[in-house]
Image (cartoon, rainbow, N blue to C red; front, side):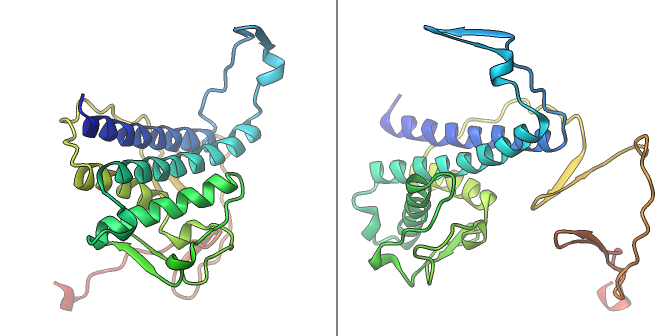
Length: 240
């Protein structure tokens, strides 16, 4: 395996961890994630009992949120290291896209490395008040970010990093991804928008109760946390 192939494999491994963490978080939120652990676990010189490591549902959901978050940061670490391995001094690269990809990955990595459970931006003086952008994938405007609380809205969120990781692997590292093999069909039809999870059901679950919710003047129905269900817009004659 060549050095580039090893770098590509490293980035792909980070992507896989993000995909697994996404599945675990979704399943944990929906309370369909098994939480079984050994009744008796021995490893090396240590031994723990089930009571010591068992998880409640609320603990699992809380931990899954941080597992998902750290998996996105791991992609940033992998991207930073991979770009540095193939691009001499990427911080001053003449290619603005390479420079932006590196700086975004590096700055996110720095925020995570110094405070993984409560990250804050640590922007170098020469990177402040600057916009780094990989077109159609991710943009980070560092204006006013230094020493502020890290927020996904600053860079576009986990899927932006996922797309950036793939971009780095295929466009900068020049890794040739293999033909994708069999993909298992999902057991449930799920759509997700931000943290809103919509699951298709064939019938209402037992115990479901109708809620009285008054639509807003524009017809939207509030779901809470800034989410709404809106009636489908009909096509006008001008649109046809």
